[in-house]
Structures are given as structure tokens and as C-alpha cells.
Length: 156
Image (cartoon, rainbow, N blue to C red; front, side, top):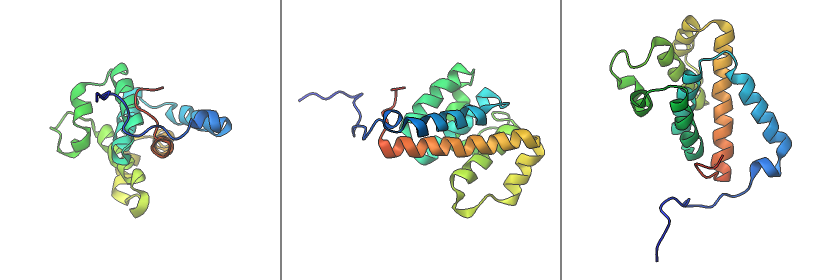
């Protein structure tokens, strides 16, 4: 018996966009609003990292492709799982602060620590910081939708 190596291990459970279009459109609008004013490459790095932490293959696939389109380097994408150990200069101070904040928002159980929040607040003006926080909770929403419904990577 032959198997398709690209076939999903588990079929999608439901078509979320078709089943609850009003909710889906609301999350699309939230996503668009959250990105406003943020550097597109930083947006993708944050979304990739949250998707890695949440185990969302669909979002990980999409945001890696989008990061490349935004001009992100393979090195920075590949090193995201170990961004703290990356050589100096691979990520900017803003990148590092955004990734730390994104991780703590994704693992919200322990809250967001004052040091991590303070560092982000030092490097991002208030409006941009609020956008970054919005981006973090938005990608976590997408991750939860796509993991719960088993959205297939590569299907936009």
C-alpha cells in the first residue's frame, strides 16, 4: 500500500470559515488591526514563535512562507526555537524583547513578568507595544482555532 507523504495524519475536523463566517471575519479583522504599524518581518517572527510553542503546523507553515516573502532570512527563521542562544546580532534588541513578550503571552499561566514587559516597553513606543500585545493574542487565537479544527498546512 502506498501513502502520500504530504497527506495530513488527521483529516480536518470542520471548515471553520464556512461554519462560523461571522466569527471568522471578526478574527480576520482583529488580525489586520493587530498588525497595523508593526514591521512585517517582526510580525512574522512573533507569529512563527507562538505557532511553534502552540504546535500549530498550519500557522507555522503559513508564517514561515510569509516571513520569507517579507524578506526574513533563513538563519533567523531556523534559529527561532533557540532564539536566546542565537549569536549576538542575529536578532535586534527589539526582536529579542518581542519574542520574550510573545512567549510569556503564549504561556500566560504565569503572567507576564515585569522585566520582560519593562524591556518591551523600553524598546517599543506605547502604541507599538499595544499592537504587539494584540498581535500576540491574535496569533494565539488563530493557533487555537487551527489546532482544534486540524487545519491542514499548505491550504490557505
